[in-house]
Image (cartoon, rainbow, N blue to C red; front, side, top):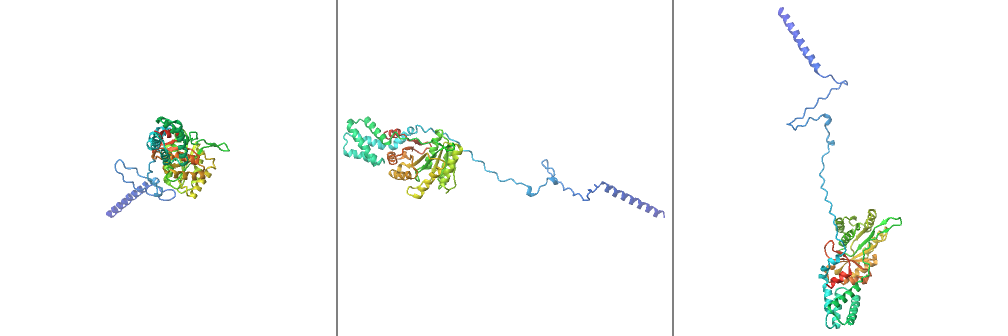
Length: 398
């Protein structure tokens, strides 16, 4: 009986101990939220390694994959801005390049002086003189006129020392070239009826292969050297290379180039170039047109359209025809057709340093009645020079 009572007492004590432990465990748990929901257990901490381990990311800091912005490809570095050059002054270029011109042209002057210095000037000698002038592309009519003048003056003078002959020939060649012609490239702008200042517009035209785009770029250098601000119009839309080339010329002297899509309307590009010149307040707008054969009437009509569209902004001050001096009399045929379409006001004669046919200067002026204003005397960027008749003749007779 005593043993049974002892077992009951032990059992009661054990139940009391176990009940106390359970109550204490429940007291240590956090009370449930007031809304009755159970709190989500916190995620396990991220493993950490060494001192570089990041602190654990909380639920609020986590982002979905749509919210993550990945780094894009690195943009290529911007190309460096081209260095703006300061062109050489145009004044005196003919004098500086006289020696180069003399090396290629002196066969004309030396041949004439040699024949005129003969002791007896018979008909055969005068025929040789005519042949030299014709070979130099002076042209039939100017040649006859020059020979007749020389014959008369040599007969009257009587004596023919080398100095007298040189002075005589120089005087007659200058008379053929014309020393009183206006050879200035027109850079004076105008004013619109509304009183708005407008830049001078120079249209550069010519056949393929004459160096037209290069001449336009070099002329921009001449104008910048004289203190003018310039806008270039790449209206040769048939050749992407022409627009690229002109833009390179412009960047070298700080001139903006207006261009359009390849194969686009040249008249539209020319119009936009003049508009840009007005907006910028530029002094001169140079428009490079596409080279075209003078025998293609459709292309020539398009050139006339370019000029008419540009004139909606105001009159075109200058139309420069670029001719290759090596083409000789064929260049005169080209010049006549262009003059009929766009009213040429001046000639830019290229490649004059590489030919003995310098007489084309006389012939083209006689045929068109317009002066040679610019001559290309080499491959250098500053080898385009304002034409100086006296320097040219002195080079011929050097």
